Length: 172
Image (cartoon, rainbow, N blue to C red; front, side):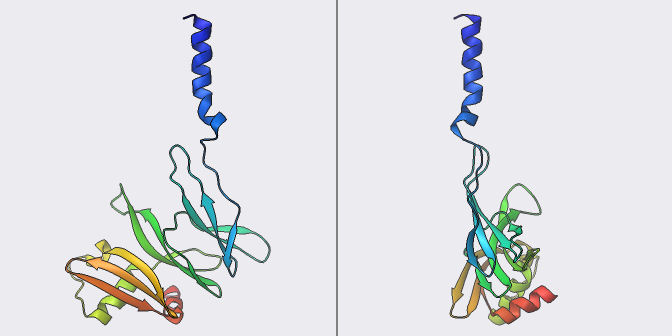
């Protein structure tokens, strides 16, 4: 094989990913309610697909609230609650956490305070650092309440929250 043919082949192979559109792309803002909305990330070679939570204010300015949302988003007035992924404090893996935000942000991690509310109601003793290692297993809605389900060693903890309780957590 000649040198020029080899060089041409290598150039074509190196340009192929960009020509095929393998880079990350995002959708347009998709409104949910009260200025909150999703932007879908279509992923790429080294980026997983997912969705971002954004807030678009009355002036049309778009603010990124969270870049890795893993649940539905509950919205009322200027507040939203959702589960999202973040890098675990010990690093190396993603951890599902519960977040609340009052527009336009920032999002506040309410995982541990909500777990403690649920533990008190369920009469589960959280000793030995469980609040820091408990996993958020599910986040669901039930009538006008949010229910966060946590897995702690030996039990599941259910924390029922109203919007007033979420607002109080954001004030603390």
